[in-house]
Image 1 (cartoon, each protein chain N blue to C red):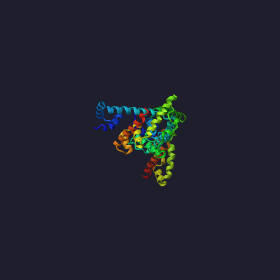
Image 2: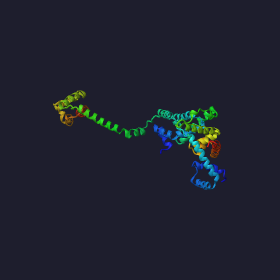
Image 3: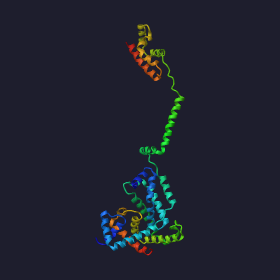
Length: 195
Length: 178
């Protein structure tokens, strides 16, 4: 390597841009080369002078202005991951605990203020009334025929309706259930009248 | 320590702390580089602010696979080149003394440092623009020679040659100051 080539190597050496092997080789050269030693010490002195001249702090108001501008232009991206990460941060722990307790307290208050309503009871006679209305739906002739055969009218349906009757009498049956059961009765009745 | 890429990504995702960390990492270097290029503290402040404004405004245009520092210095260099075109060469002697160092307390020290800074900036002003670009990016910007070559679109040997010439000229000019 000619000495001129060491000029570039010296710059790279000063800025720490030589590979391990290159650096070792250059150090060996530096130990024995007074020209490079002089160059290197002059370079260090020059750059120290420059560093000193440039050692000037930036005005605080400039820094503040830039940060403020960056804040104004930075909007959080709404993504599921980010939202989850955000809301799971420890700073929200007390908030979560408070929200949980509030939900429990509201639930208890509602339960105490508005107890479960007592369900209406449906007895057989109510059912019978309903069944009476069913008569209108079916063929009057078939009903009359059935009544004359059994001589007891709709009350003879009782054994067939036994299963449903229990359901109507139990507490907690709601209107939907009544409707459902009437529908089933209707089918049963229909079957009977078709015989 | 988080990489520039990680900080940039955090900022892009809406975390202002990412920007603050990047700003903290590069503010001093960038200001020094621009000061060396402009040789005028007032203009350096203007260009410095404008560079960061561009970064903020165009953050979504930046390719995160590239180096943030190269992008930042490229923005500053483009702005400075515009400034050079408008101002031509600014003679440091034209500057007001009060524009330079004002953070020290000792009046004698202030005067001495102002004088040194004035001479150093004047010395830098005597380099060619291409020498100034390379020298400031390497010494104050902390960019490697190969990164500078990539940023300026020239080969590595040209970068090293310009750096060598810049150092040689500065030694000659500043040698008298020392």
